[in-house]
Image 1 (cartoon, rainbow, N blue to C red):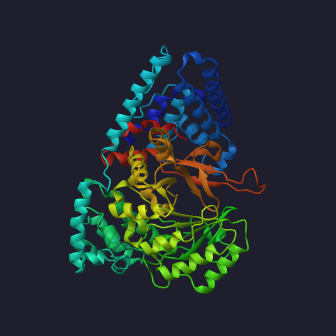
Image 2 (cartoon, helix red, strand yellow):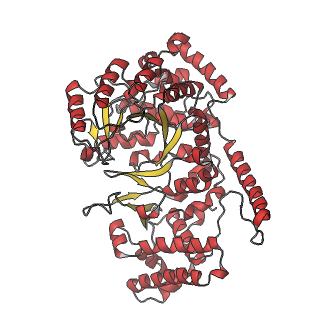
Image 3 (cartoon, rainbow, N blue to C red):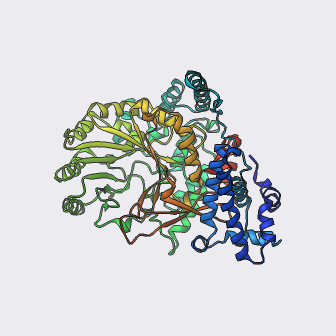
Length: 598
């Protein structure tokens, strides 16, 4: 794997001379585009026609790269992208300066054309699991088993870098931190077991936080800036206990990043909040909300949002723009609005599932929460009540026997299911308290699922796979892995789609099926989930000058509705992501196959 300094126009000319040869044979840019297209098609045809001369891996790579380049080299793609790849390559071939083209752009083009030429070989960083073609029967099976053992050992070695919060050392560290927090608040262990005490003592200011937790200068600046711009910020005492005294170890990187915003985020949010041209409703919920408190994107399910706040706010939350603060007063919906929302749901019997979310509905005390759930359960068409909550991670003591019994009371086997969907971001978040809460729920027949947001801080090799293994052991079923939303202000959290695809194909695949039941998805504004498992759900239509891949996502209704639209999203440049991984100590040569996931 090379660094950005090695991806230049000169490197492109040296590594892919075919581009410049084709340009030299063309009289016009139009002729150059036709020449490139003929070359790409010829490469794909001849590779398959002479397949005995190539490995199957080469054949697949040529096919994939040819398909991607074909989708880029046409007028529709270039018009949609507002950028012409043909023009850029033509200019370079003609000796024109193109200062807008970055190393990340050249890296993408070099890998694509080397791929279509069948000349590129890449390392995945994983053990080669191939077996000699001469072996068959039991001999082949024995050799295959040996190779699988090697793959499993390599995965185990990679996972050993990460720590679960259920490890003895983590439990001991957190016991000391809990004592420090209780001492600061002059509280008792009895207080710690009371979820409402945690809500009443949410840490909202840097001056309090830094007396309990070591903070970097950047963290101090970002918290101060967030507070000065009145951005939502708060950490429960319990969640604070999951953070380390030694942040340089990186163990709690994913935990800190959940709630301590980077300075880039606070600055961009500040700009967006004061701009008339910026819409922070990234998912276009206003376009899919037929009545207050309800969002509906699919036929059989709707979202009900009775509370517009949480015990603490995830920085990259899709609704953080409409949340004033952690547990802000007056955030619970009025009786009239709630009744109107429930009446609307009852008027649409095609809806058979309600996701009660927000905000975090389990931050509502038992009595008003029961009134809300009673209203949902009273709707005859509802066969599943799903509750979206992070209290399993932020205040797991919320799951008292009374709460769990109340949730279980809405479960009617064969008629109505009750499920809880949470968001565990990293195995280091899992604790004995969370495990005990999950056990209570499962004993009452309440399923627990996880939606993992695939951010930079949980995207290293086998980091998500390690999380899946631990979730399965705790009793939480992996459900979705969300590609981080393409919001400008959350750039530091974003990961290229190619990395999520690589993780799903190369790392998650090494786990048993029950440990990897989750589905990689991209949430498309106004449309909902776009499944990343299949290319027919999206097209890669351009490589932009900064090296970002531009994807065109298709609606799930594309074969149902005659009136559909598509959504364009510029991804994170792969080279930028890899170089950032390198700064935290990763060997990026182990990620090289990322270039060929589209």
